Image 1 (cartoon, rainbow, N blue to C red):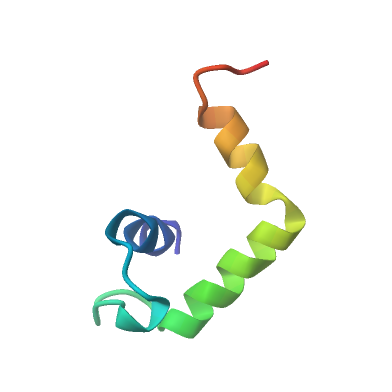
Image 2 (image 1 turned 135 degrees about the horizontal axis):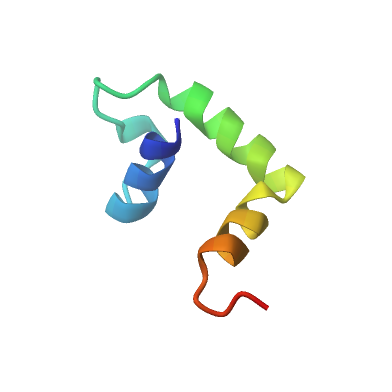
Amino acid sequence: MLNTMLWVARSGAPWRDLPDHFPHWKSVYTRFRRWQNAGIWDKVMKAVSLDNE
């Protein structure tokens, strides 16, 4: 799932245009939104940022 989310972010492609070797777009999008609503992406970005304060 994470690789698929990163592929969308990196490519700029719409969710529905995921290549067939990835999971179904709606499953990935649903998990992405859950993580976003739970604040997980904020934690990930803070953990990988160069300025970890």
